[in-house]
Length: 338
Image (tube, rainbow, N blue to C red):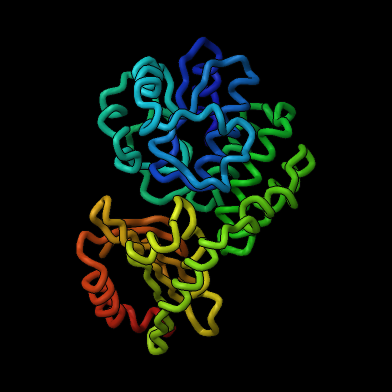
């Protein structure tokens, strides 16, 4: 964020505002952590702020300080609408295109509020008055830390803010093992721990708290895994029937796609998940090295994300989606074998 943007943000926050903070649809740890971290900071400045999530989010994130204050647009519709329509300033976090917020999209398109985008995904749209975009950052939570610091607010980072931001960094870096983790990420995490972030508690609540049904669903996904050695690729899938059998709850498949990358010589891992309610196959892509799943998802599956982590979807049935995917691999044979 350059000096002109910092000056503009200071001016906006120097006067009374009705602030709304919005994550993307199906918010993950980085989205919720960044929203709550910013919410605590703004509230501590004496500003009026509310987090409005497009829909629900996983149970393993609901321990974060302030989570009870989040308005779920699907479940608290009238209250959320009132906040959105009254907003004078809107922060959009962890996404860079208004199509990513589901039912909130038409509401935000009509809003007269000024927008501030803070996000680390590639190819940001131009809807915001102020755009803080940096695809080299590990997470939006890391960016919120730098955002607060640039506003000379480092001394205002409380234990609650630290726990929220640290949680998002941990989830988006896979506990600091993904390629986007930098020395700056580690320095940020260290500072947040000094401010009170509880590493052991956060790691336990996010990664080490499972239901029997989730572990059984993981077993099902691993059993379904297919390895295509000639393309250094592994994919798996979960049907709606398999999800229902194992009492699937939002967030239960988080991290399943990463297991493919733990196999020796695998560079490209994918999971296909059937969602009959939306009539789509949701797809998560992961890679190691220089193979860009962001470009792959954008080109073929209406998606995008980062070089080594992206998402997409298919409107076809499961077998058609997988068949199309496997046929596409031949076009990327040189990249996957380099």
